[in-house]
Amino acid sequence: MCGIVGYIGKNKIKDILLEGLAELEYRGYDSAGIAVLQDENFSIYKAVGKLENLRNKTQDFHPEGFAIGIGHTRWATHGKPTELNAHPHIGSNSYVVHNGIIENYQELKASLIKEGFNFVSQTDTEVIVHLFESKLTKLNDPVKAFRATLDELQGAYAVLLITACSPETIFFAKHGSPMLIGLNGDEKYFASSDTPIIGLAKEAIYLEDGENGYLDATSTHLFNEKYEPVKEQTKALATSKLSAQKDGYRFFMEKEIYEQTHVISDTLMGRLGEAEINFEELDPELFLGINEIKLCACGTSYHSALAASYLFERYSKIRCSVEIASEFRYKEPLMCKDTLFVVISQSGETADTLETLKMAKRAGLKSLVICNVDNSSMVREADASILTRAGIEKGVASTKAFATQMVVFWMLSLYLAKQRKTLTSIELAKHVSLLREVPSTVVVKDELHEKLRRLSKRYLHGHGFFFIGRDVFFPLALEGALKLKEISYLHAEGYPSGEMKHGPIALADPELFTIALMPTNLLYEKTKSNVEELSARDSTICAISAREFDKADDFIKIEERSHYMHEFFEMMVVLQVLSLEISVRLGNDVDMPRNLAKSVTVE
Ligand code: AGP
Image (cartoon, rainbow, N blue to C red; front, side):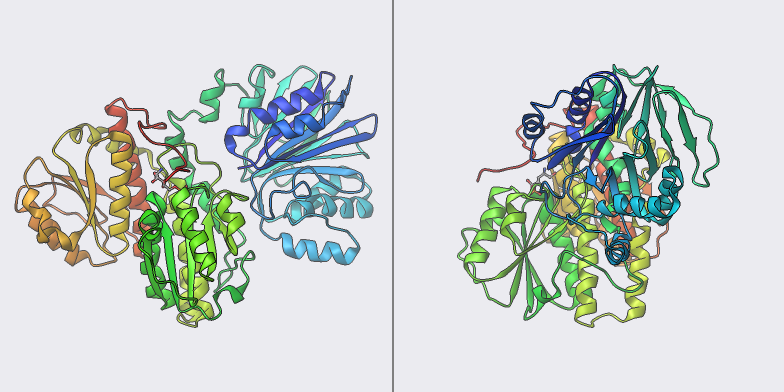
């Protein structure tokens, strides 16, 4: 996710902005920039890559005395990581930084171009500064112009804007992306999280959605979305920077599980039509002449690929095969030019997956990567890429990256279904409305988390776990087993429910723990009979379902859902939290499990 900083005051503004951005590095970024306005003169610096590159560019810039400034670290969602796409974005005499996604930026951009504005970047953000200057010309009042700008923005944003026509004022707005204001006498700070201002500001205003306003060194003007004045509510700042980076959660993994509802909204943003899916980054011709999709990945990304294969064959009516990258590399695979080769990777750097992508390209196949990191090796290598927009994932055990991969795959299966006319508009519209509800299905409810925390004490030993499920719940079972293995070091395996009787049921006894995924909207009766076979042999069963099941030793109830994919996402959260709480009880390092790396860049 992008990071934003701002400052008004007379101290070393360049250092304050750069150090603030450094404190936001944990959010992940691929470019950065700052803009300073002093005595009505603007100075702007932007650089691709690490902050060091920006520091080097500003080494001869030493503003002294009162100034205002804004800074930004960018995690690419629209447009490649380049200097032109880096923030701040520039108008004729205004600058803006933005975190979030402007969902209607294309129509705004089109009308601004008609007005004669010249765009230099591929980003959605650039429309904000040109729209502001368009309004300023008409209204001749920066406050009114800023408000008129906000009224036209749709989507998620945290925005800071500075303009030469109000050289001691920073304009701000928060809607869907975090931002806070730090106060310390006549010094004012802005940041996406409190980490950058801990030790600088004494207290903070944590902006609520819809809040906006402007401030200078002597006064703060805060309004709600109706532009009615809001009384400032200040709060004491956190004292530890590391806990601030975790936003108060115990682990990055825990934070990332809770973030899923927000990042999935970002993944969906700008991509859902009424009865179609819009991937502006895809050329529809990519799929011309394609009769098969081959998915290739490792680990958790392999699990999302496996689940996706059910969706592609069910909805897009296209053959879909799935490969484990380390196996595919050496099996002397047959590769046909009518196959679209799709690699999936959170990091975009996994050596085995990257190598299979190169193999496919050498064989002349068209390629697509579904990835969380723009400008990664795989994104640069593939013919096309779809970004998952999960933001940086620091927990080694992948959670939100998996969730956003699944959302992208569901959307892609529908995108193809429309192109191949394998779903009607009514069916597509139904799926679109189901997709809009996904963020709500992954909200972690307090009572669920507390139940799983209590339950976890009963699953700290035994001679192993089976996670079982059918259809897309089989890959989810694999993923649940991997989560548990990774962070608890207990043995677990995912298995198709229907396969248990072909051998594994020999293990059934009270010491064998079976986590049974029992969706009510997909093969419930089949799954139920498989679980009953285990229960009859005294295996310890933990059933996850919306429907009461009395043959389980433990039962985790999820909500009644109208579609199995909603059950999928809700059960995914249960598995993630259960693994986390078991690991906590075992005293393991949840974020940095032994023997593991976040990105496996070696064979
Ligand atoms: C998942 O929790 C693990 N961290 C691991 O299996 C990971 O999914 C795998 O190494 C693939 O990584 P990638 O998605 O970055 O390619």
